[in-house]
Image (cartoon, rainbow, N blue to C red):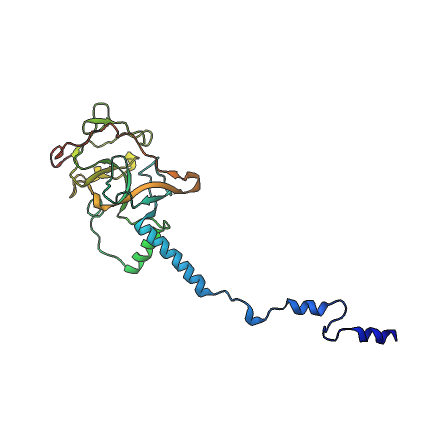
Amino acid sequence: MDTEAQHTERDPSSGTDSSGTEEGSRSARVPEDSRTPVSWRRTAFVGGACVAFLLLLSHFVLQPFLIPSGSMEPTLQVGDRILVNKLAYRFGNEPRRGDVVVFDGTASFVREQSPGNPVTGLLHDGAAALGLAEPDETDFVKRVVGTGGDRVVCCDKDSRLTVNGVPVQERYLMPGDQPSSVAFDIVVPQDRLWVMGDHRSQSSDSRDHLGDPGGGMVPVDKVVGRADWIAWPFGRWSTVAGTKAFDAVPAAPAGGHGAGAHG
């Protein structure tokens, strides 16, 4: 009797024993069609949008640039990834003495080159724009030493570089380097720049192109931007230090010091 009473009191709609094991198991199940699948299309779209945003950012605003050589040591070291401010010389601003700039050296430092494989070139340009590959062989990073109208001479009796007759104390140079082992006396044409590396003994710069068309001068409109930050490696995260070396240099006289360049 006791056994029958216990069976009668059970809830037939529960479908479980008193422990509720089957009920708990059933409640944990999720219908197959109610799950949210991970969409590879959504992932690809988000990834593509991020890459497109970074490419647009690097094209118009801020471009990473990998330093491939020691020509700018100690300011910039091999393997540094700098951020180039592409807005620095927009809206009427122009490069100033002492600025570290990235520029396209086509027709000033290197000759015009025939186009290579367009697909390979596009992939390389994209990787370089993100700072993942070395820059094009036509891209250079140097320090502006003379602007339009300036007379730049090296060296005076104390082995110093002078600009418009004023000696420049170049404390940013690689320790042990002289301002130049090559003597020169040049006048920078308007809308041109005379640029040099900080590691003078290891830098191929304006001095090496005195006899080339253009005389080693870089057109202002070939400047990509100003190197403002070191972004990588993390231990070197900092701004690219400015310099007061040219503060005492007077402006070039109207019309410059004359035309031409002298070796």
